[in-house]
Length: 422
Image (cartoon, rainbow, N blue to C red; front, top):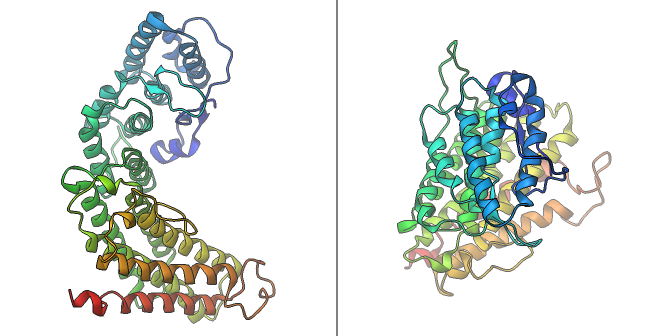
């Protein structure tokens, strides 16, 4: 896949002044090979629009090199890319494409279906750029994409695993802080930092480690509980949610859901002394919070006389929100889809048959399955509602009641009798 301009990133970072390019983690560049790359031409401002094409050709040329020639080309290419990315006189889009290309350098190509071996010498450079306080955010994001790509490649340096894990955790756990507008800089926007956090979660998914002393699990649980609390506080508001409130709830639920899924991707078979009750509590809490905030959205609409500008769109959005949250919890528990079985490395499989957490999770899964069945089939007592999409067998009121029922059932199971007897 060729480099593709990412105009949204440029708008968020620089108010639309520049265009950027991004490539898939392991995309092929279907561009005809050319002579050795003229990196001097990259620095000319008038050539900025051509750099994405040149970067693709450069990567393609490297794929065709072998042996000593390949190693020498990789070393000289990385040096050239580092110089371009560090040059303040080069236009930002070219600097971004340079560091992005550095993260895509490959030492060993593999057959289709097998991950290539990333160029290991690029990793310490990407880490250094990302951790440097004065690095512009657009370069930081390019570096972060490269680091994540390394974690997804074959031959990832185990000696850097702890460093990269800490880097991802620090990014994920850092809340957005508004910047100061000056003549020389534009502050980072919330949506951009959200990209950083979600991308860092992709990196933790690739590493799959629970961390030293289970630090990855502990930190991710804190994040889920933090976002769940935010949803709870929005739910408890006696006033109708504003547009800003809706957006806040969406971002909180989205981040919490991806974090829950990331927890499901870790290898619990290698872990010891995991706080199983804390993980179970977080999954219960997030599921209830998702049900409650979406039930409030429906209640707000009904209290306004049902005057939603588009009730069908509202219904669709609520269903999507609920499925995103609950299915992520399922993945967090089983490392599989709702219809699948728990994998051998999953959190659920790591629990002993008589573990109280396992019994509670059985209850949670049963409630999620019932809710999911309702979302897909309704209560089975009617045909699709008139003027509603065929997939929906219920209206907003019935959906609100179903969400409230699920939340109530989970609340009753939060401190079950068998748990209190332990």
